[in-house]
Image (cartoon, rainbow, N blue to C red; front, side):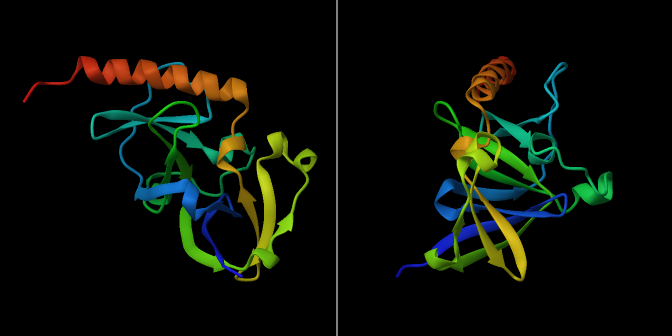
Length: 168
């Protein structure tokens, strides 16, 4: 039986994972710009090759308490880039640290009922390195209304970025 690759990461001491196939890449935390009146779950935006990429704070979305905040804690934080929830482009998930790219057997997965988590965002649980890991569904991290609001914020940020573009 083929193994399943997952990206394991930490959010406020909670181990989570995504299917490797859902992740485009991960990056160290760049400088983010934060327009006024952004909702708390949006950490800001960054410019990736001329595209405004929204950054979501999983700690806020999941209602988790940060253990340490400040410049030193930010040194180890990562962005996990995934395909945008609605439309083309990329969205980034802000996590405390990417821990591993692991291979697991499908038999190690314990399904979680959709009613057991908000919007069914946890699709399964797995034990990794003696820790319980929540395998997340990228498509279900945000509610449909949140996806629409994020798409609109992304359009506004892209327009702002385009206004500052300089022809080479």
